[in-house]
Length: 147
Length: 147
DNA sequence: TTTTATAACTTGACTAGTCAACTGATAGTT
DNA sequence: AACTATCAGTTGACTAGTCAAGTTATAAAA
Image (cartoon, rainbow over all chains, first blue to last red; front, side, top):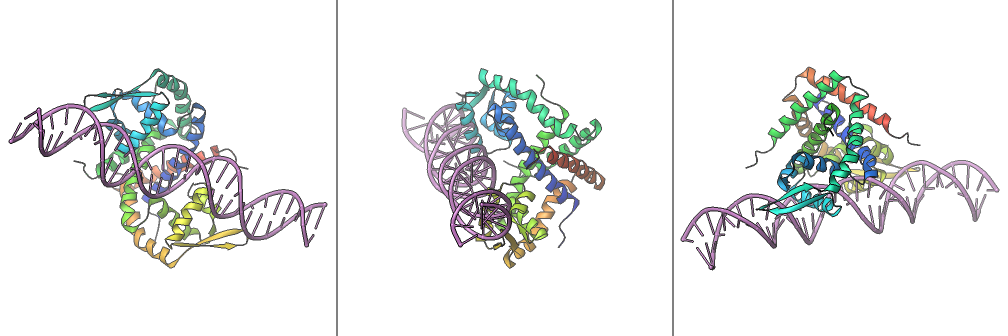
């Protein structure tokens, strides 16, 4: 019984790294009163607003129930508003949401970036990005075709 | 306010990919009655047994409290035993734990491997592994020196 | 040999998510 | 108009983790 194909080694590294850096990022964002997941969601909203809950759920890979709860919290904090609009609810950042991003974004991006910049050359980062993009895109195709 | 350094793009890909493939893996492992985290823990125990809870917690990147709860579940399922041994508890797989791994391991490893093997050449996988290893090792150094 | 310290583990209170059943809004049919 | 279908979102019950205060086992000092 052998336990280390190259693929499984990559898998482990990825899981360990994301798990750990996610925790570090949560600690880092604490001073803005945000979690990594919330920061991520706010960024997506900023980029794609107005959008529906379904669309956001898809982008940040959580379930419909999960996004409902997450947005409830963000709304309570005053970072976003949801408004019933035809059959769906459309989500937008509030002033307050934009303000917190304005503050947190440069710092958080620098933080994220530092994980890679400090050890990889520009070309290596590009390579890593390309490889991961292929892997990620492929994994999405693996999902049971959802109809 | 720009939002896409190469580092932050890599970060996003990693988060999305691990999040999604983790969920797929949970679905995959369901027929063995295991979660991805449990499989991971059992593999580490298999490789390093006997070991203490502290050591295992470190390996699978969860807190001490988390490992305590996790092992409680695994023990209840009969996959492991903990026995007070001097000041620490040492963990070992039971027959049943070995049996479930014997069954799940080849399948799960093949599953993990498939994410990479199906889109990357051997050399590309090697490159990805090398880059991620450097990134991961670096991130561990970033942690506040824990004393 | 009681007291004090400390390392390893547990536990109560909490958080953020999952799943699947349910509710509300709109549209199409009779 | 009333009935049915369907899609978007919510919610109850649950899970797996976090954090920090509390236990327990051993060692060291008084």
